[in-house]
Length: 322
Image (cartoon, rainbow, N blue to C red; front, side, top):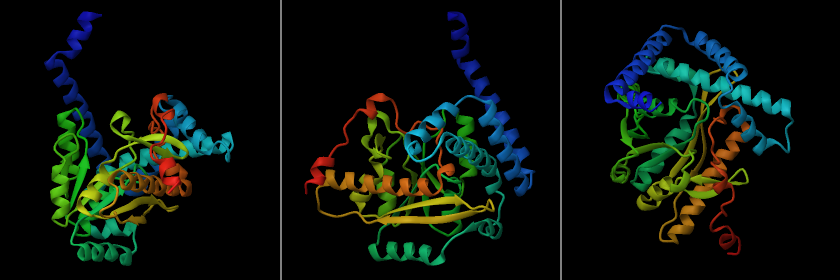
């Protein structure tokens, strides 16, 4: 057993494994690129249903997470239906991702509805404050569309991302996100502050489990470890946070939704302001999940392990008494 483990961890074997994964991924991307969009949606939905029914990985966690949130108001059959729908959405998103790079602006906006007045309002807000803006989204609908959306609307935008451990896959993902600058969240994040102060847009996802690096805040009534980064960037720069999402419509097109805009206070209690901003962001996501429960990534363990469930939410009593 020790010898087998040593062989697997050998640098040459690791490199071959990574190259094999890259080759399979590249072949899949090229195959998907040849399929027409309506077929992509049909195949994705079938693949999602098949995975939910046959593959056990993540299914129990998905149903457990949905029961944790909706168990008091939805029955087991409805929760199972939502869970299967979530698998369908994830599969379609994975197949849509390679197609987006090929779309010209006319085709992209034919599939993505948005309110021009809302977008112009964001531009006016940036101009009035002479600051950039933070696009804060989540793993909901087709979140990958947000990056290309900003570029197509001529926003100068940087996308925060965590690179995969496979450097060949990292190169592939960067190629697909080539319309924007990328910022590795595992490195120096002072770049974020500099770009926001240059009136640029920073795009990030805020619904990941921060584990021991985050702040435990209520999410659907239970503490969930939350990254403080978005609030920190907003308070340091005075840049607003725009909570926005790409939601699928019944026609399997997409709609760009600005759920709310959070203006950071200046000169207040930094800790209290951070908590207030993060709670409002969680509230925004909760509202969208309640409206579109099958479009969020329930497979992910947002609430973490038991240590986070039993961690008290900081600042709640303090703010409630003020």
